[in-house]
Image (cartoon, rainbow, N blue to C red; front, side, top):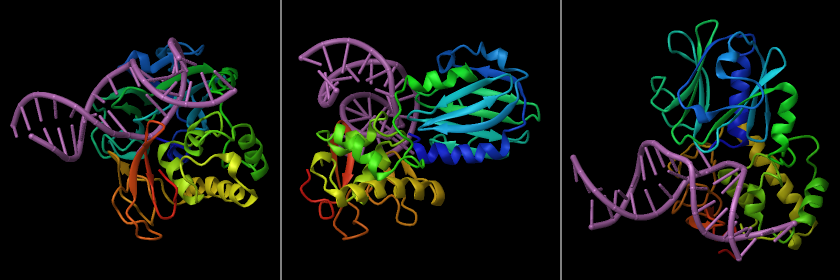
Length: 288
DNA sequence: AACTACTCCTGGAGGC
DNA sequence: TGCCTCCAGGAGTAGT
């Protein structure tokens, strides 16, 4: 579930509450979710202090003392919630199920970090796809390299020229699967791919080789603005494939049969590249 | 190199 | 209410 904007929003929230806290104990209910990638066993986390949080694409990196780190990927349904000793939420983010207000630990809470101020950081994941790797700091780069991540779309280096260059090499690939390919750009998932394709005035099946300069600049602007707005103005609220648009966002994803915000034509849902795909047949003609 | 299908899982929604 | 099928925001792997 969580894509770049959700993970970045979560990172910013946790950055305000976790740094300086020391891990007191660790409870792992589902062993496969905790991977010893050279850092050690879960019990070895005791006594390590959290120094800060970073993000790369959809990966959240929790830096620890003694040159160690936890690398977290929430995949489809992972959720992190930090609560004080009284159960009051300090920071939260990720998949909205279980509801953020639900009592924790939940039956799907698989990892709990108990911290020195008696607050707890809960990793809950109803589908068990999420992973936490415990790794030496110097190993983070290698771990992420394995994912072959493309550029950060909100990074300074992601210019229209960079996009043009990458598109030139993958120009025959349809646009939506390309946006979802983490080696093309890091961090875009199914929701924001639909939003970007719509904002770019393209269709999921558009091929980059057909783009002129204006189309390319519009796609570049769409990638940056859709993700930037989600980070600064609030992430998408989507539950079970249904959107609850706030401030007109999302514009297409999860809005099947509802009127397009631009032209009032009902949004259609199709399947493209194996993924549920939402488009406006008027704003995005020639599709399907 | 670049497609597709399948896989890892649980749970919510909708049809009957 | 119960049972069934389908679908869900990710990504690695295997086969073509």
